[in-house]
Length: 170
Image (cartoon, rainbow, N blue to C red; front, side, top):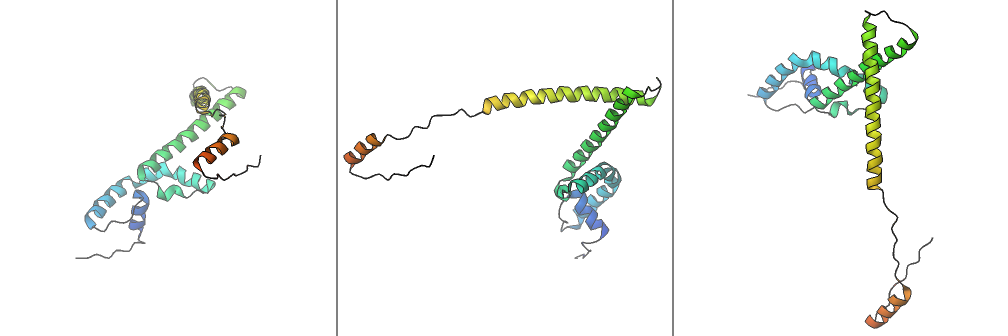
């Protein structure tokens, strides 16, 4: 028995987007994966909607070619960066505006200050690691030994051949 569903149906397009793969040729995996997809599509979309927005602004179209897990964790990272930016913004405004002690903005300000300190520490470690890597991988200027024309002429006479000379423009 052969089924002929449309590849442009909503279910098929959601399947291709959710799993970042081609449509299967067998009904059994398509059916069960579709059931799983419909269960997780709303939370998955809420996490990855940030990537859709970021990719629209950056002009990247890699979103459709990433696997589900990579896309999910990139979405979480974008939301974490957004949360961090909000906390840092509240911390910056806390310098100029005094918040009440029991305000949730004080907690956001504390988190923002902790994030800023962590960011500075991470940036410091990253910078030190880059400097160390630079010094390990730097190329020393090595002396390139050019052949001596006199010695090469004597070798050529002894072996009875005539070497070709290529002149460099320096």
